[in-house]
Length: 310
Image (tube, rainbow, N blue to C red):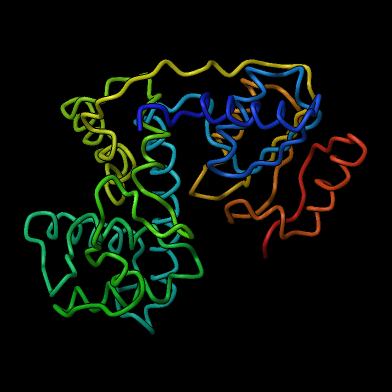
């Protein structure tokens, strides 16, 4: 696991390039792949023909900072959710006062932290509440129904609840399905190169600061997975290059926040495109995805913005 880093994967890609006898390569990456893309261009800029990175990760894997960006978006989404609940009091009966709904749901999270409810494999705790509070807009009806059920003392039955059920994992995650996410290997890629302290006291303290700043969803994201991580490998600094680079960020998405795309652009340079949606790595499914094809065919970069998923 200690060898799983963006830098080493980038070197593997360059080994393949060399084996194929290619002088340069094109690279399209989205989400997690973009960390490898940024590393490859920083190491082998002269071997990149064209590169496009959609929904990129940040140039530095500082997990407390990454958590903070995600949770700030989640808190903003929670407030929008509470506004929606107030407008739909006739359906969910949580009241018409947005501020009162916010306070009540934050109190529910605190209550579940103090006294989690367990039903079979389902554990309803503060982490569960924070996850429901962060539901995307198209999941608000299910989230509201689940919250009402829990407030009334029942057990929710939607996908948001069942996803919290316990799962069986094989040692080191090496037996995870090949068509799914291997959690341990994913965490290794992120945690191996975190340049900040990852001892549990440091991460716990940072989580409590975030929770105070964002009481609905703060302190609930990536950091715990890197607590006391045994491997620390110096990351390859992301630097500006001369090869054609296009970065696209999605304005309101919560998986790889827009600010990460801005940070990647600041570190690596290139041309920046804003996609006006909240959907992670949606560019390939959009009409403006044609700009990606044009970029790789002709080298024409595109800035400004384009419509996203409606």
